[in-house]
Length: 375
Image 1 (tube, helix red, strand yellow):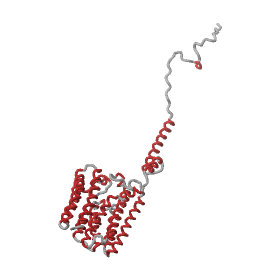
Image 2 (cartoon, one colour):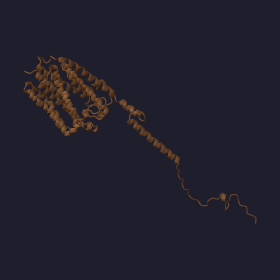
Image 3 (spheres, one colour):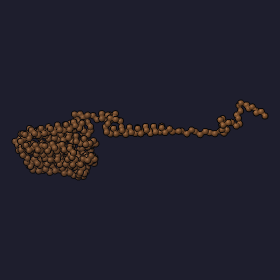
C-alpha cells in the first residue's frame, strides 16, 4: 500500500537520533557556580601584598622613617614645639639653685668670725657663688642630656626635660651644659688666684668630673647609688668649707659642721627626688639609692637626713645664741617629713621636694645671719 502522507504539523512517532527529544517534563537543576583558580590566586596575592605593606608602614613609623605613615610621623613631629627661652630657663631647674646659694652664704657667714666685717671679701664670695651656680646649672643640663639620650626621661613623673620631650636637640643641650661648666671653671680659676689656695685646682677638677659622671659616661655613679654621697661631699661639705677657705685661708670646726648640715639637705633633696622616680628608674636600669634601699629604707634615710642638721644646730646654739631662731625652719621640714612617710603616689613627693629645698635655704641663710649678727 502506498504510504499515507502525514500532515506537516505532526511530529514523527519515532524521531531520529538527531532530533530526539525527551518526552517527559522535569525541573532543571540550578547551574553550579564555577570558581576560577586564577581569581583565587589573585585575591590571595593582593591580600598578602596589603599585609606586607601594612607591616612596612608600621615598622617605618616605629623607626621614625618617612615611608608608610610618613604624614602621621610628620604631624607628630610638628606637634612637639621647639624649646623657647622659658623652656630653657625651666631646664636649668631654678629651685635646685637654692642648694648652691645656701652653702656660699653660710661659708661667708662663718668666715666673718675671722674678719673685721663680713663683706671684707665680697668679691671672693661672689666668685664662689658663680662657681656654685655654674656647677649646679651645668650638672642639671648634663643630667638632662645624659638621661635624655638613654631614654630615662621619656616617661618621667616630674617636669618634662629638654631632650626627653624632644623640644631640644641633645647636642644643643650638651653645649649649654659645657658652657656653664666653663663659666664655673673660669670663676674658680680667678678665685684660686686671689686666695692663693693652689691645691684647690685638684678639688675643682674633681668637682667637674663628679658633675659630668653623675649621669654621664658608660657607668654613671648616679646609677650606682652614689649620687647622694657625692652630692653630700661636693655640694655640702666642700662648698661650705671651700667658701670659707678662699676667704680667710682656713676652715674651723664650725665650717665642717655647717658643711655636714647642708650636705644632709642636699642628699635629702636627691633622695626624695629619686624616691619619686623609683619605679621608673628601676624599669630603665637606673639603680639609684632609692631603688636599692626600697620604699621603706629610703623613707627612713630621708627622715635621718632631715633631722641631723637640727642636731648640729643645737651645737651652734651653744656658741651663737641667735642660732636657736633657726629652728623655725622646722615649719617647712616637719611637713616634708610627714608627707614622705605617708606618700602613696609618685606625685605626692613633689611637695616635700620643694619644702626640702626651702628648708636648706632658710637653714643656711638663717645660721649665717645668726653668726654674723652675734651679740
